[in-house]
Length: 451
Image 1 (tube, helix red, strand yellow):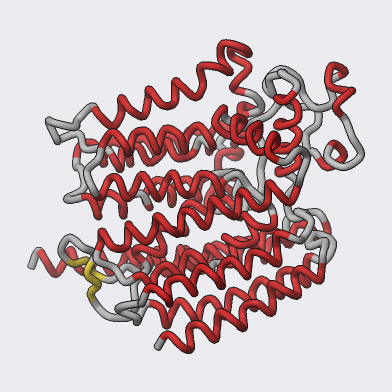
Image 2 (spheres, rainbow, N blue to C red):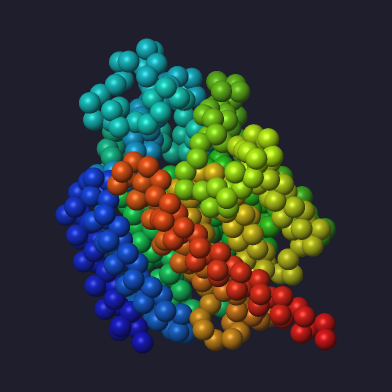
């Protein structure tokens, strides 16, 4: 069974190599999308086979990593054109090396004129805005810059390395759940992971090992470690705070406050040096972010309704998102999951709600879902064992797995520099159908159980 898997892995090197030959992926958007979905088709076949593999030897697991590194190595040598966020990372590292807080001045400020160069500065987006990234991310940029100043490739290697480290930790999670290590392929060989870390060098690559580590610690009921890792992840990129209620154990008398206190202390320790220097400025560009729109799912369908009712659509969608996330948090607190595996699985709830209701959905925003998909994506057998009891099939996981590929269609924006309606529909409609099928199945199961 594993031989065809590794053959598919070797074949997958071809589209990655051709992507390297393309060079500027933004300029060759159509070619990039074609190569991405060739890679995704091969990855899909490998995923289907991996779900049927019960065991893997240490040598085979090592081969999974070797092939993942080979796929990403092609992309590390491509210029990060699908996103220019990484140039801001390098710039912020350079600014901090001069003893200046990244929250004090935007890149085009006269005070920073002496730091501008023809390689990094021209590619920075929003030059008139201060940084949006939280303090732990800024600390990481500063440290990485000092290791290899102004190196674009070094930042690509670092973010790709973070993603691979998460794969190492994911092995521990799989073992804790009693799952086959072959599932590691679903994470490691994902084209989304490769392009968004090794090519685009998004800081989410540093978030991934912290999140996977927090899930592993939750399975081991190490509440303090969960809080520390989740706090660090939130201080790198804010969205992991949404997982706090799902991973908390409010009914456990011994560790009831250990996790949230560790989380708060870690977050405070990360913010303190920058707050002392920049005060409220550490909020940065964040308030403006909520007024931006890109690749909307349900949010895009709701905006006309809010407009017709006379509500500010941006505020209406944001309030609805906060309301839904608040209700999910209350459910987690008042009806905690039955066991650690269920707690980790429930992390899908806030991730899914945020994905569907955010007004800004870039492909790399789905990276935090990939490890969960690797853990809980189900084969076509009726019932799958999850380490704590059994769980019926849920088509939702298949929908999310597929979405982690289709979301890259949002890059079709670059073809004519405007949203492409059919590309948005093609991303979300399959997901809606899988979620609806899952809802129908669960409703039928609930009806049968009450008869």
